[in-house]
Amino acid sequence: MTLIASHRGGAHLWPENTRLAFSKTAKLDVDLVEFDVHQTRDGKLVVHHDALIDRMTDGKGAIVDLSHEELMRHVVIGSDGETIPTLAETIDIFGPSPVDLRLEIKTKADGTPYEGMEARIVDELMATGMVSRTMITSFALPRLEAFGKALGDRGLNVGELLGFIFLCSPQMTAQLGWNGIIAALRSCGVREIAVRADAVDAEVMGIVRRSGMTVHGWAAHTSEAARAMFRLGVASFTTDRPDLAIAAKRG
Image (cartoon, rainbow, N blue to C red; front, top):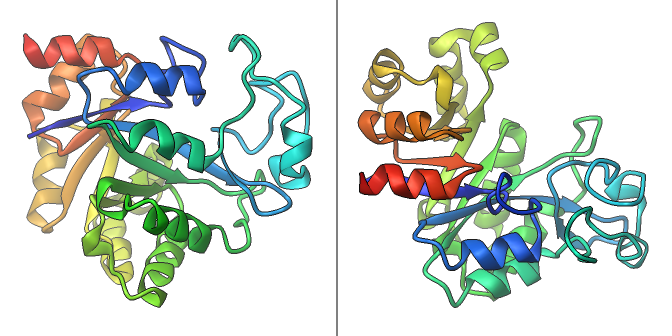
């Protein structure tokens, strides 16, 4: 079965990664909500796509340079006064719903990791009983490794997650090729990969599946792209237009 993930809460329908978008998504016939986690200067986990707040809020600066109190002084553009939600607030919205989590671990603007963030995410998921309802994703393999270690330190393993997925960019594919990517994932113990929707075809599905790995998709934002994801049988895919994906599934 191919699962639908509302990307950033439906970024082409509502202001992305907001409580409004998440509350709307929680009522949709989707399987997952995709969102991104960063960390403030004082270690608060917040849900925002960019490492900077410049694009989506009335403020400027890097999340890592702001305390949570300072971050709360800025509102998300187009959200009717909403501030950036915390991971805890996001879980509060989806915990009672049937919609599970597809959480992307982000890095600072320069690509370096947030100190201790993976362990904090694990602790939040454990405290709320959401480990088994969460897919963990990242474009950075070291972040997945760090998350896996944090799980292990707490007596858990990645097999208890809903998914543990490397997000593969077209640039990575061009640089390493499929054999190189698969070898890198195997060395890290990762057995799931997400490929951009316009780069997934039957040939790619065959190559990756023959390696014993599970294929997911990302950025299937049109009806045509969503239909292709269902036709190819990817495990899940993200979309900015969950409404179109739902219609494609039903049609």
